[in-house]
Length: 151
Image (cartoon, rainbow, N blue to C red):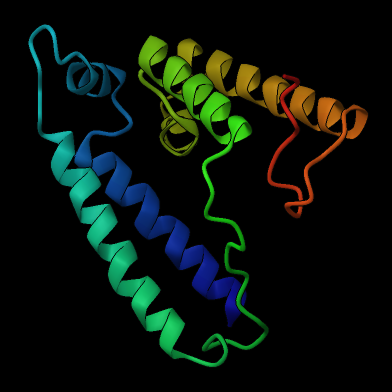
């Protein structure tokens, strides 16, 4: 049952990204371009996602265990540290340059466009490079949330 729920959640997520326009780089860059011809429509996508998360989070925190069994995996850290800031900046830089972030890029693979395929391949290389760097550098005791950025 858990696998079916994950599959259905993935379909709902992909449909939401596609319907909202998050898989269209020009729509995303239009939203991020606040100094030019700004398109605020994706703010509603973010607001909807945030509200859905908040409702789900409150529901989760009231339960003793997940509906489908197992244990909850909840964040243990709430601090804003250097790896979070650096990672956020790199994520934003990549998103702003090409108009894709990981979820929408994976959904957009079905288009078969060369630019999407190249982006997803480069994203995979970046993820692999992170794994290599993470094993070579000291990690903070945060359960694997990131590498320590040297001072």
